Structures are given as C-alpha cells and as structure tokens.
Length: 152
Image (cartoon, rainbow, N blue to C red; front, side, top):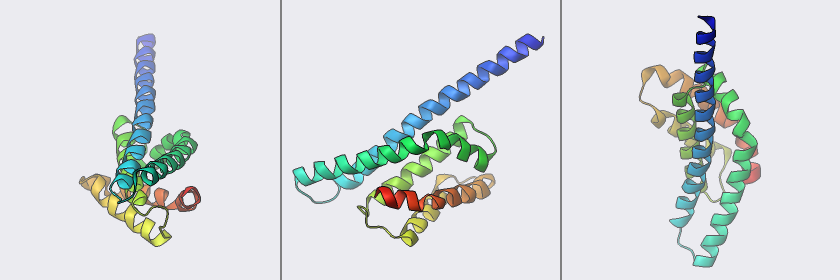
C-alpha cells in the first residue's frame, strides 16, 4: 500500500515539475512577445524597429534566465504552493508588467514601475481569496526594480 502511495506522489511531483518548466518557457515567450508588440506599435523605420526589438528581447531573455530558477521560490513564498495555477498567475502578471514596461522604451521611473505593478496586480485575478497573495506578489515584483532598471 505504501509503495502505491509513493508512486502516486512521485508521479504528481513529476507532473508538477514538468508543468513548472513549461510555464517558465511560456513566461519567457510571453515576455518577449509582449516586448515586441510594444516596440512594433511605435512609429519607427524598419531598421530602427528591428534593432530595438533585438535589443529589448535580448535584455528580457537575460533577465528571465537569471530568475527562472527563482520563480518557484517566489511562487511558493507568495502562494504557499507551486501549482500550475499559481505558476500561471505569476507568468500572467510578469508578462503584463513587462509588456507595460516595454512601452516606456527604457525611460521609466521607479514610481511609474510601481504604478504598473499595482495596476497589473488588480487585473490578474478577480478572486477575493487571491487579493492578499497578489498584493504580496506585487511587493516581490517591486523588489526587482533595481535589477529591471539595470537591464533597461
């Protein structure tokens, strides 16, 4: 009986890890797409636009690679568990924040960044039980201001 329970638990852990990896990849892709969309809507020549997209995408990729392993730590700290739903909520919030930040084309103040974070946290979930964890997640995102400013 105990072996069956252990196998079942190991299988669930494996599925959760696989989902976390896939979510991390989706997060990275979403961030790059969001940055690209922000840059594509700006009126520039084709050459300038391609250069900006390449530069912003490279910066975002570097940032995401640095924090990919930390995503689970932050999600666990904020939500108390790492699940597909909590990872998706984190990815959704981060993608929306990066999309808004990209619109500033590197010229964003800490106050503007914090306003973006606050606004995004209000739109990520309408669930009342998620209100407090999302405020905590917003605090975690705000702590990354210095790192984000350095890559912009």
